[in-house]
Amino acid sequence: MQPDLLILRLKEGDEKAFQRIYELYGNSLLGIIFSITQDEVVSQELLQDVFIKVWDKSNSYDPKKGRFFTWLLNIARNTAIDQLRSAERKNKNKQVSLDEVHNIFDKTSHIQSDSIGLQKYIDILGPLCQQIIELLFFKGLTQRESAKKLKMPLGTLKTKNRNCINEIRTQING
Amino acid sequence: MDSVEKYKDSGILELYVYGLLSEEESIEVTEAIQEDSELKTEVEEIEKALIRLAADYYPKDISALRPSVASRNKAGSSSGFFAWFGSAAAVLLLIVSGYLYFDNKGLQSAITNLEDENQQLEEQIIDARNNIAETNVLLDSLRSRNISRLALNAQEIDPDAFAVGYYSQEGNKLILDAQYLPEPPEGMVYQVWALEFDPLTPLSIGLLDDFKENEEGIFYLNVGSTPQGFGITLEPEGGSKTPTLERLYVLGQLST
Image (cartoon, rainbow over all chains, first blue to last red; front, top):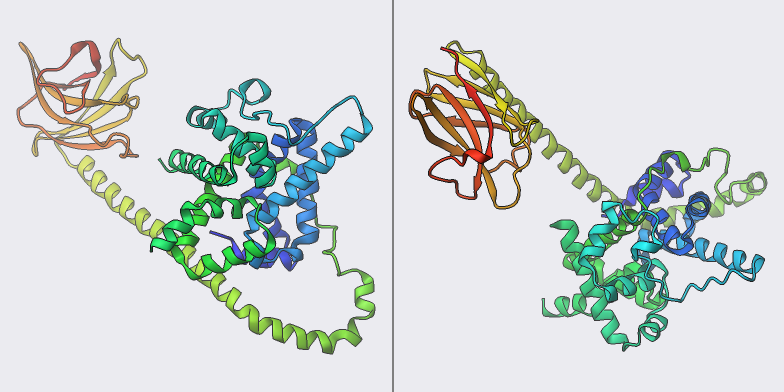
């Protein structure tokens, strides 16, 4: 359910509404940011930047164009990607490429790999699902780019992606 | 119906929540889900799963990280805004009244959501009242005379297991407080036995079937015979004819 009233209050500059929105979506956005930066300290700083943008720009959210969560998601991804690019500029040796498939679900690359939270998804999602969700959802690569990376036709990617999300839904509701 | 299924299966709704559709496509989906509650529910379910997945990706208490926005004015409300406010007021009023008219729809849906929330709260209150009623019944039974309390103590298999029984000889009933028994593994169930000790004669008085669902861990059991004590064993689903003593979790004796 989309918290329409909260969004309305946020747009009016209600701080309590802002706090509640932070509580509702903060952890998810931190997850998105961290999946892109893979740096705990940086991610926590960026989370604050993201929410300041949310506060400043809340009037630009247009429900006709999509979900509020999607709007937040875009801000979080873009903030993290911008940071990554500027870090890349500062440090030429540190090659960071967003569009590469790293398998962010991979245990070794994940700092919290022993948390039950993530483990349950690793257990149910095969490597292909993990990559699809990484590219499309976490990193927000276009369908076309993702299909190319994963060497599969667009239609297949969409269907597979839906099946992957269904797996997660079963896990969460079951 | 069929077209709704097709729409769902196309995978477009997932991409909509990801934010990967073009603006036109997104607007189309927004319109489609406003017209069809099934599609709307589908989108909400997808969104819920994604919010959870992302939150689980890096679980952390973020309450201390919340930025303070108290000193930040919302964009557009600087002092410059007030300077031309007067002259623009009339125009604004016109726009605002128009906006308000069209926004009415949005408010109405906000009200519907609030009503939903109210309903959920009401349901919680009803649940709470039912719980109180149940608790009162329990209290009444415990207050009655001729009730003996017995501790069912841990056995070798699990030194932390513990249960308390309240046995009413009058009604031949046992109220069992089993909240300190560990959750039984998949495919296993606790079975309660009324016992006579000399010679040892166990009589099954019931299974704690709904152990997981029973949040309070209080069970009401009918006792057929006149027992000297009670024991609880872990048995395969459906229970056993005789207790498996290796899986005897707790045991207690009635004082005579």
